Image (cartoon, rainbow, N blue to C red; front, side, top):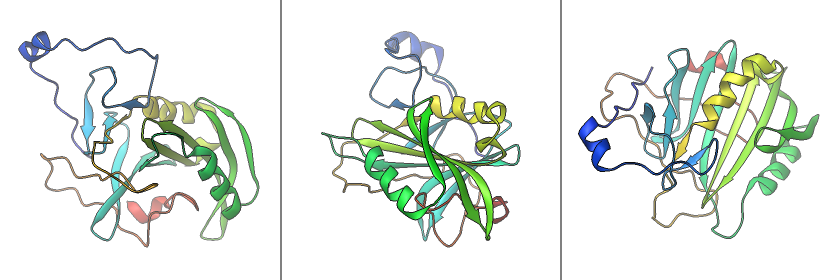
Amino acid sequence: MFRRRRREQPEQVAEQEPAAPTRESGPWDADEPHPETDRIDLGGLRLPHNPDFDVRLASVGDQHVGVVVLYEESSLQLQALAAPRSSGLWDEVKTKIVSQAKHLEEREGPFGGELTGEMKVDGQPRPARYLGIDGPRWFLLAVISGKAAADEKVAAAFIDFIKDVVVVRGNEPMAREEPIPLRRPNDETGETPTEGPGFNPFKRGPEISEIR
């Protein structure tokens, strides 16, 4: 498990009182007012701390490209991508997902339109939900698979988690759909990042057996 991001000291908070959020929930952009809670700082993503979740970095080669969260026989896969300033990516990404996965239906979810159905894991069907959130110059893709994809009570914990994620896009130039870089927390030395044949959210989430 990663350690949570330490809170600022009280005197620092007093000197820099944060502005009140203008929305009820996120995902948040790092530059907009958002609740200052304990979060895991992974560079491009800051994740809410939940002691019931097992949080892992997903890597392709030596690059950290996403996050996998395990909970209640389910997995949540998160990836943040650079997006154009003028338009979002979700409509385009949905088309890619549908072209590579069958038996998916579009429905309204907590973040707008989402895809729900099944994915193939080792040749076996597994319930899956694909959720996309367009932000300012970034796009966050969340893939819920396993029990939570079909059970709203279990899914609620993942949805609350996503709503408190902070995306740190940065100001550096990035190509369209380029993964926003992630890193291990500075104060962690013993966690081994998830390794696998590749992290491809457009096809399916990682199997739980691969990352334990």
